[in-house]
Image (cartoon, rainbow, N blue to C red; front, side, top):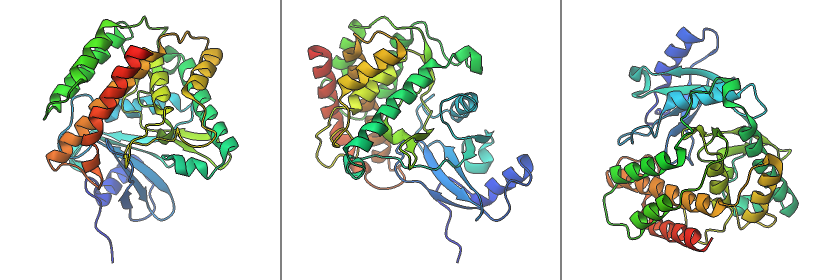
Length: 340
């Protein structure tokens, strides 16, 4: 008995499209399942029984402007695929909303494990855990070493005034999802604006660089960097600040936010920052600002998820746990910015 397709993707319509655009790629009826774990864009595993692909599309319902740009995500993985940065091979991009109800893209399936918790990493042991995280950092250095112009991404972003625009953009996204009073979040936004650092030379920025947005192979090497929805050309230290943030144990009970920092062998944020400075040659003295900015962005993202949950527009379970976390993230951001 054939199972019902997951919300947001019709396998039959997808096959019709692939048969037209990539004749011979698919050899049988397609089946699809939603890959759990993503809380923003929706990710599906699709197979014809022989080969496997991955489909990415925006969430159902409330969508923030520019936050779920499938064309942008497809463009950056297409540009990076020939470089040392490991990304899945792109198959096609489709903006015809009659297929899934929204623009989407298809890419080849990449093998590997997404490590999302300290418990998962603990099973590897301290030495392998350390190797995985250092590999994550080194892959970030490789990404930031790619010259945007050399891979056709010279116009992918506007580096001048990048941090100021980022603050304004995330402030607007907060306003678009504001459904309650949040103590301290406007104060954090304002203090970040008063302490803007000077950006280094621009680079391709992932925008959400952390361990559970990559796949790790059995040899502990990164096989694919995923989730490029926030990518641009801008200040590379925003990626480092986010990685530093996730390298601090969150110590939040029953948290749906992925954190591996408590795993034995996990490098400290300071160690990762120092390794980045040595390997990239960039100055990192303002990393506290970038880390506080990462706390602010995460707070805004979770508030957006909470907003969609309140409206009944989320797919899956566990969304009720996001709202209570936001004030704690704001507190971490204020503490990091003020104390360094």
